[in-house]
Length: 499
Image (cartoon, rainbow, N blue to C red):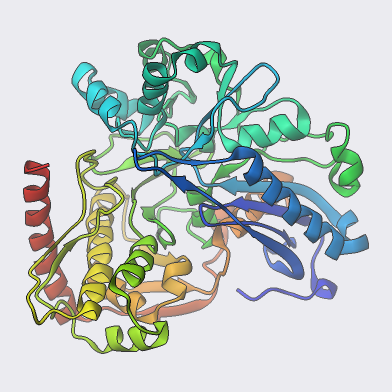
């Protein structure tokens, strides 16, 4: 979807924020959900990985990057900033930090990629009925969720655990900073694994097992319940935003679905960015959940079943560095020229651990079948195929819970950067795949949800998929991928058995 010049922007405008795991962005969208040319800014998101498995961020540095983006957008907007009528946003989710009574951080912000609580996740699985809690919260006991991380904090930093005034996500910390108060959106809270996603309240039984109470977590709010009235200092810095509604941050995955036109069960979103995921929006209260999947919320009325992989664009980035491949355009050309699954390799792409479909805290990566004749580019191609094959596994699990036929809509920076990977994904899933022309689907989705909250958009489910291209699968290639899926399953079983 192309951006539009300011002269053609339809009122009202909304400012959309997106704190991603790689990049933080802000941009102005018009009433049609189109990015206004020249009114967008970006800053790097810095996450820190430690040898003990921790993966964290400095929450103040993240907000500083976001605020600098807002400064630049408003400066570029000039008088047009007065036409901005709301602020909506999203962030990477499954993040968590402790704050004191003055709303200052007591810990760094732990992220979805933090594996340091793997032992605590195993403990919770042994001690509690994981399946009973999973049907309520939609989440397993896994280090990517809050319960194991809170238990890890209790064991390793008990003084912080006992004295914390509140445990919050980045979105809540943003509201505490700008308004002096905070709510957690149902969307963001559902990614914690602490929300009863059926009753839409903090799961008191699970919190009690951690010796916590709901009072240590923010009040819950929906995406159409804004804060208004920026605190002192902020209203003078951003007068155009001082008295307009700021809607709670939602999960970036939910926003990506909306931004690519996948806000109904008839369209399934496959997102391949730094990580990857398969998600669908379904109406009403959630039903029984297959073991491979999670279930989050878009909002009070809509659920978001699906599955996420830790691997995505981070895998080829790592392989480029380790394998010392040549120029990207040369690698892309050679990968595209190779026949599917022709390298004799089976790759388990779990270098950063596993989420869907197996959710093992013991999983790691492996490459099977290398010989002295194996070339680095073949390992690279096999890695791309392995991610696509795992997305196929998750997609088939999700298909079983959807009410009928659906269209696959795929996007994300990793796919935009590689036509070869788009072809690999299409052949692996064995379905026609639409690739919409949307550069920033999460930011656009946050903008559209703000427009829905304002009443400008009646229902985001009615919006069409943005224009793009469609690829049809090759039946022979899909058959080869199905054989490769079985080899990958066998390798996975061996790795887990010997972990």
